[in-house]
Length: 243
Ligand SMILES: [Zn+2]
Image 1 (tube, helix red, strand yellow):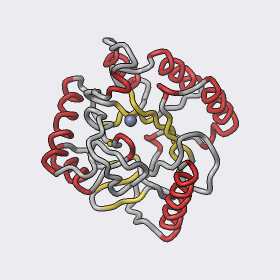
Image 2: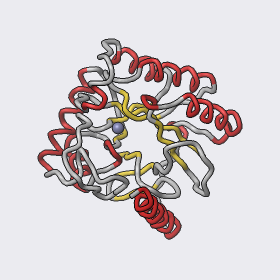
Image 3: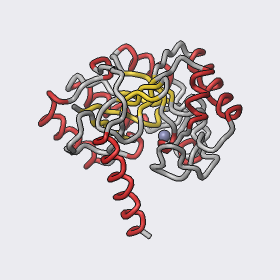
C-alpha cells in the first residue's frame, strides 16, 4: 500500500504548485499527509516566496477535504549536524539539542497550531532527523504519538509512539507493505507532476489515506531491520559516489 506525504507547507511556499498538486490529488480522491511549518524562518523558503496571507485559510480547506495535518518542526532552521535516530541527513532542527530546547520548539509549534484551530496527531522533523529527546518533548508538550519517518516494512510501535515508515522521495514500487512517498511540492518539476499522475492512474487501488491505516502493537522485526540496514548502506555508497 502507498501513502502520499507533502512537505514544507507554510506561509512561504510555491502557491501555484501546491494548488496544482491539490487539484491533481482531488481528481483521484487522494488525501495526503501534509507537513506544516508553524513559524517558517528557513531562509531558503522565506527569501524565495512571497508571504501568503491566505495560507491558514488553505489549511482549513485541506482539512475539510480530509487531508491529515502534521507538525513539521517549528522554524525549519537547522541548528545541528546531527543525524539522530534516523540519520537520513546530517543536519537537524531537533536532533542533538537538549530536551528543554526541543520542548520549547514543540510547545511553540503547537501554540501556533492552536491559534489556528489545527488539530494534529502526527509529527515529522525537517530533514527527517530527530532523536529520543524529540519524542520525549512531543510526549510532554503535545498529544502527538505518531511519527511519519524512519525506514521499515510497515507501521510499528516503539516506546509510546507509532511510526509510519517513510522510504522514498518519489513514486516507485518496492517490496514493502506500506510505502510513504514524500514530495516537496515547492520544488516539483513538470516531469515530477507527470510521473506522479501516471503512477496514480496505474496504482490508484493501492494508494490509501491516513484514515485507512491500522495501528497495531507491532514491534520492529527482522525484515524491517534488514531493509533499514540496506537503505543506509546504499545511501552511504551513493553519497560516497557523489563525493
Ligand atoms: Zn521540510
